[in-house]
Image (cartoon, rainbow, N blue to C red; front, side, top):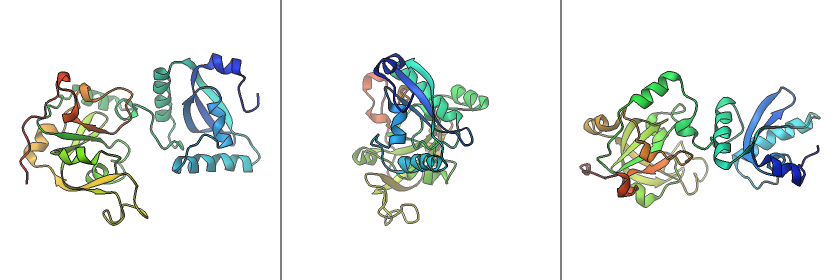
Amino acid sequence: MGDSFSAAVAAKLKTYVYRLIDPRNGETFYVGKGTGNRVFSHIRADDGLDGDEIDNKLRRIREIHLAGFEVSHVIHRHGMDESTAFEVETALIDAYPGLTNIVAGTGGNDYGAMHAEEITRRYSAEPAVFRHKALLISVNRTAAERSLYDATRYAWKINIEKAQEAEVILATMQGLIIGAFVADEWLEATAANFPGRAEGDGVPGRFGFVGTEAPNHIKKLYIGKRVPDLYRKRGSANPIKYTWRWPAEQGNAAGAAMPRR
């Protein structure tokens, strides 16, 4: 077969989800989605990716080659449309821990793997009614690594003008609101602004905030409540949502403003 599909085969595959496997131990180390010869692009390192994802993935590929083996390519499911492929890719990313993928599967934040009890808590929880300009931040991937405050405040690709309008910042995990904070100041994610967090010159284009927990009466309004379906567009991978920016015809209202401290 070599390292490419013929045009006829590629046409039959349509959109597919694939796995890259280390033949030395049978371990799946990367899951992806694509068309044509996308599955083979990683071993040629010509897919245009950069940053940590390439470092981790290519390091594994080079180790395999240095050991005298070739990466195994498995087409896990094919003949799909784009939206179905997104769902399959996300499910596989959940199923294989320790992947070299940097980005979680699309929709994995809200629809990823959960214990049955988590499912029950999430869908039986009362939906939140946003009475403030609430900025929602999904902390699914970071909450277990640091305090909830740190996981929520740093460091995000965010519209800084919109973020500064927020009256409360709500940390969410798989659709449930688990924390509430008030930002005193939004700052560029640099080592100077966030000592001990940013490395080198920080994270270009990203921001974080300095603040405190929201007052108790505000926390009672939101913590433990479910993010309404209106704000959880299936397939969206963006961890940031500005509740007051949703169209009025969809039922959103900013409500009463939080008193400034």
